[in-house]
Length: 241
Ligand code: ADP
Ligand code: MG
Image (cartoon, rainbow, N blue to C red):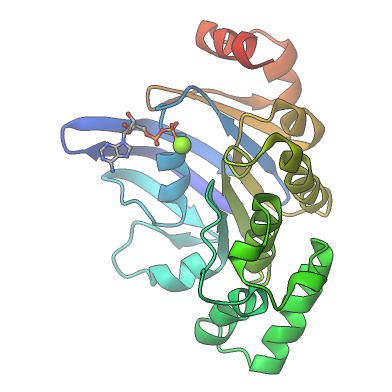
């Protein structure tokens, strides 16, 4: 089990944003998290690598307890790749330096090794030609592919995605989804917040549907798309399919 989330509850002040969320992600699983805006998807995914604290329950990532005050969160985070809606590349660094900086500073890799790894991952996302450029010189789709390559260069045990295509122009969505599909097919463990149901039906093996901070559905892809499900999930699907 790579990610084990048990009865997680979280409050922002008086507002309960997550209620008893339980979800397991096994090695090689591709779990798609969907649900209406404001249902807690981003918050859920951020609790997994300790970007958001939670008050109740337990989260284990690769056997390490995220909520334990003794856990070295920066170290844990370095092994869980995270790709956000906005690309969040370092604007003042070239693409190649974006890919090497954490490898060198966090993992202690030699520059030559980090560069080699960076170029291999840039090649995988089809961007070796752009290595010397700065993020602002790339399209949104290219920047998001760099963000994915940067996360992969850290040898993550799992990849978390939070609506990685929702800020992109329509013509750039597919190139990012293609990279994600390939990753999924290669067996990467992934937890993806996305409304791209084409992606979900292609590669997800589980779907988590959230509503008002609750995990309302946690089922196989086939069950989700074909089987009986909650009224809320049906309403959600009818709006986006
Ligand atoms: P989703 O990703 O599904 O759209 P979020 O996890 O971003 O949902 O947000 C869930 C709820 O928590 C929303 O009602 C949002 O307004 C609230 N929320 C998110 N972040 C904060 C915060 N930092 N402080 C207070 N409320 C927040
Ligand atoms: Mg969100």
